Image (cartoon, rainbow, N blue to C red; front, side, top):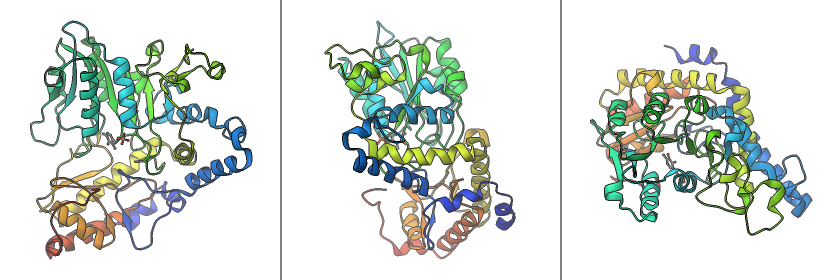
Length: 416
Ligand SMILES: *Cc1c(COP(=O)(O)O)cnc(C)c1O
C-alpha cells in the first residue's frame, strides 16, 4: 500500500487546508485535543465582535444570538449522535453533565438501587457516579458495580449483560474505551438493559465526531460528550448532552434558570417553568466564547459527513496498524482489530511507552501517553493524511530499532 495512492483517492483531503497544521510536526493527538480550524477561529472572532458591537444586546442580536446558541448548537450536533434536534443541547462539560443526568435518572428504589459501570472507564466518570451515590445516602462500595475486564484492556459485552441484574437501576458506559479504543455495541447493550427494565446512558467522549451514532433509534436514555476532542472546539470547549424525548417530562436533578422555557426565563419568578425539551437540563449562563468555535467546526462536519469521516478514519488506522505490524513488532496493538469494534485511535502497549512518547515528540510527532504503558495514536480524518501515517510509522521504526527512547527520562509529564 503506497501512501501516495491512498492520498490521491481521499475525498476528504480538501479539508486539511482548513486547519492550522505545523510544517515540522505531525499531530496524532486529535483524540485528546482537536486542532483549530479557520472556520472555528472565525466564529469565535465573530462572537467577540458581537460583544464589541452589541454589548448586552448580543444576547438577542447578531447572526448567532447568545440566548439561543446552546439550542442552535444542539440542533447542529444532533446528526452526529443520531438524536432529534430537541434531544440535544450544548452545555456544561462531560463531568458536570454526568452529575446533571445521573442526578436526574438515578432513582434507587427498594433493592433496585445500584449503578453499573466498568472498571476501565475514565476516572472522572467514576468520581461523578460515586458522589451521586453518596448524595443519596448510599455507599459506593456496595452500590457501584464495575464490570471486570478479562485482559485489562477490553470489555466483553456478554459480561456486561450478565452484570445487568435485578438490583441495577442505572448503567453508564463509554461508547469507546479511552485507552484501548474498543467500541462497545451500544445498540445491543441498550436493548439488553431495557429488557431488564434498567436505564442506560453512554459517555461519547471518544466516539463523537469519529463515528456515527443512532442514539434515538437505539432507544438510548441519555448521553454526554465533550466537543474539544474529535470535534475541534478548543481547550475546555463546552460539552453536550442528549436525553431521549420519552424522558422530557422528567424533572432535572439540578435546576437553574437557563433550564427555563425561554419566554419565561426573564419573568424572574421563583418557581421555574422548565423548557419542554432537552433545554431543561441546562443550568446557568452558557460560556459563549467556548461555544462559539463549535459553530464553525460543526459546519465542516456537515460538509464532510460523518459517514465519510468514519470511512477514512478506519482506513487511516488500518494503514497505521498494517505498517506497525511490519515495522515495529515490539509494540503490541491492543485495540480490537475488527472495524465494528474499534474507535478512532490506535492503542499501543510497551513497557517504555512514556519514553517512546518523549522520543516521538522530539522527532516532531505528537502522540499521547496513558499511564502506565499505553501510547495512543489518532490519525484524524479531517486533517491527517496517509503520508502522515507513513511518516509516523517510519519514525517509530527508527526509535524502536535504535532504542532512541533510552535517551529520555522515565515517567509522565504533569499533563499526559
Ligand atoms: C475526556 C474525557 C472526560 C473529561 O471530562 P470533562 O468533564 O470534559 O473534563 C471524561 N470522560 C471521558 C470518558 C473522557 O474521555
